[in-house]
Length: 241
Image 1 (cartoon, rainbow, N blue to C red):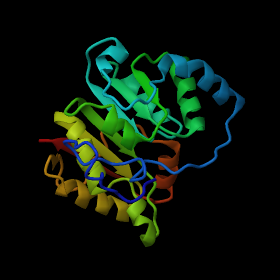
Image 2: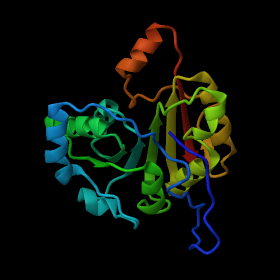
Image 3: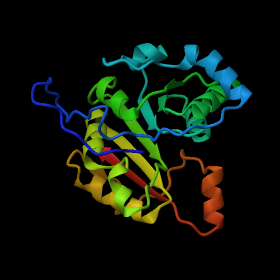
């Protein structure tokens, strides 16, 4: 999911937020996934319509969606079921899903087509670079990070996505009052998330600790299975001050 942070060399252009390089923390690990014929077909047919190509320059999301509306980014949407359900439940908001793995992108393309979901677009690229380069500061109504890789072994904790530099980047892209909603089923990671988010001066917790699951976040099959086995799920909702 992530790698260590590297600082920008002194001779590179300075940015108002710490620059995360392409060799620094990442929002994913490259894994080979088998794609179905349907996923291939929807990926090929739908991405020209709903895909947003990465570019190292700010993008106007009002222009992308063809209207003025609150914009919410989801980082690492997996196979996209929750992303599609949230977009359908909140038609007044526009959603940008970021995922690198082709099977998930193809799966969400299929859901967009079958559900006729007009307020959802996809970027197939590293979320760190998308947020850093494409999303203007103070422009987002919300950011969702659901069930990122917990990297359970202690020596791998530095690879976790929710670390201070990335949280600072997310916070800088939130408009005042915008929210960051994280969820995990790994208790130790949940505690680390709470510490990292609480330490970010641009964010304030909306709860005294962990939050109740907001109604807009649906239960996934994976989550339901874990709950039946007695596993916990922890939600955190912080807002930009």
